[in-house]
Image (tube, rainbow, N blue to C red; front, side, top):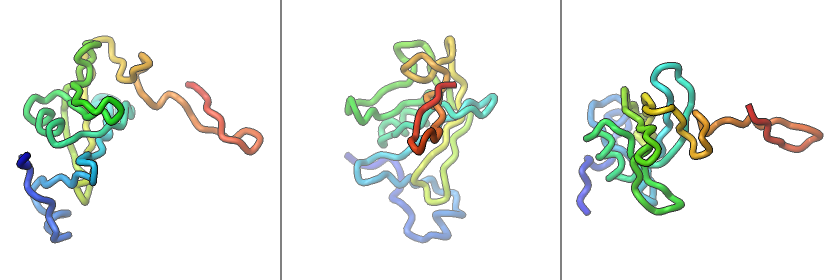
Length: 135
């Protein structure tokens, strides 16, 4: 399959300061996507995209991801109605991660547990052991 994106830029300065979007997919062909609510900045989820998911996201304005567990492309919210509409996409300095700011449709959950965010637990130390505390 031919890439729809330019090859990663070897020149560090051009990669960090230039205007060419040349995402660096990892050895598995994935790039990490951090997803926040466009309105209040809440961290909703962290997912992965392959080249097809990233291209579909850019082309449609709706977030698409690659499920590592199912080994399948998925359009977030397609079955629940909680589609994630992109308001802004950013990449980090070396273009190996992206940040999606989204508006979530429907009744708003992003997590498969029915919660707004996948980050609903805090890790705390109790008697020298890490324990999880639900919000």
